[in-house]
Length: 205
Image (tube, rainbow, N blue to C red; front, side, top):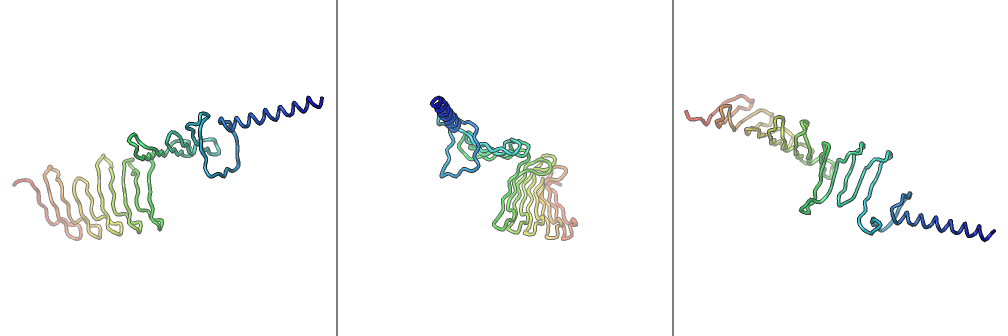
């Protein structure tokens, strides 16, 4: 009887160890509190590709790495950032759902912004080392493009929107070069207070 029980216990231990080992090797669900290693290689049961998935407390994806792509998800489980290589082997970062990119200098001041404006159009903005805006390239309402240049204090000094317009340090318009309402070329100059002083049209008299 004793030999029978001993054999049963031994068989159970061997069976359990085998199941655990197979779980480790072939993707069974296991839980570890901490893993410390020089390197970790993830492969499937054939020794080929695998994936890394990180979930939040609700079981939704936070991070997924597979097929050469890194995907980041928001709190709703929606993919918002994808990093990958394209068909030509170049690095590619895709920002979704109103995504944007900010860069900062060593003083934690913003130096650049790439994203969208309040109309959902694309925009690119740069800042100097004091976090003052220096330039803006943007699509605006109506589908037009606009280029704006600012001085070192973040004050608008020039913009290009159908016409080239300049401003002085007080923000007053000083000149405009472009196309008038009759589709002729035109030049306008203003005094320091923004009052129109001289106008010339390209239309033949």
